[in-house]
Amino acid sequence: MARNMQPIAKRCKALNLSPAAMGYANKNTNRNPKGQMRRKQSEYALQLTEKQKVKFVYGIMEKQFRGYYEKAARMPGKTGENLLTLIERRLDNVVYRMGFAKTRREARQLTTHGHFTVNGQRVDIPSYLVKTGDVIEVREKSRGSVKFKALLGEDAPVVNLPKWLVREKNTLRGTVVAMPMRDDIDFPVEEHLIVELYSK
Image (cartoon, rainbow, N blue to C red; front, side, top):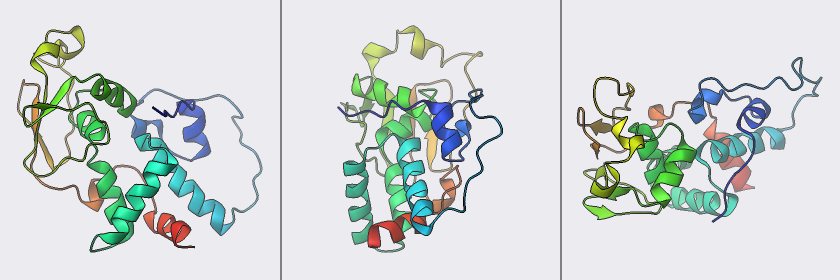
């Protein structure tokens, strides 16, 4: 399985992206603190940067990302918005959004190891696309682990859920109550540039 192993802080700086979008609150890099004098970016460079930003945040490789774009282009509505909301529906992203993992990378790993069920069925495919009404929960066998026990009780971390997801209080279970919308994307991205890049 292909994985993106690029250094988080360094890559975020190159893409002008806050590490918080990746789930890392305290990451930073001291490399090249004053920055280099860069020439004005070309149109192609701007488009490529936006594409790389989305791929990096969600941990998606090029072939799979292209597949999402082609699927989004066939859907009614704006292709760019369709692309973002399609990727937002990935199971590993939903696991992260519900607070079952601290980062999307961790969510991807936990999903691959089969710690979650969708509607009672074990799913170990991070790219599985959830739909309205799906119930995502931690498997019964996994609930005894220290990792998941820490998500319950008074000391459990507070999770800021997007409005399209609901997590039952003090449980390891959540529900997809709606499809994600464009304004649910919590990092700056100009998706029209991605569409322009692929439309060439």
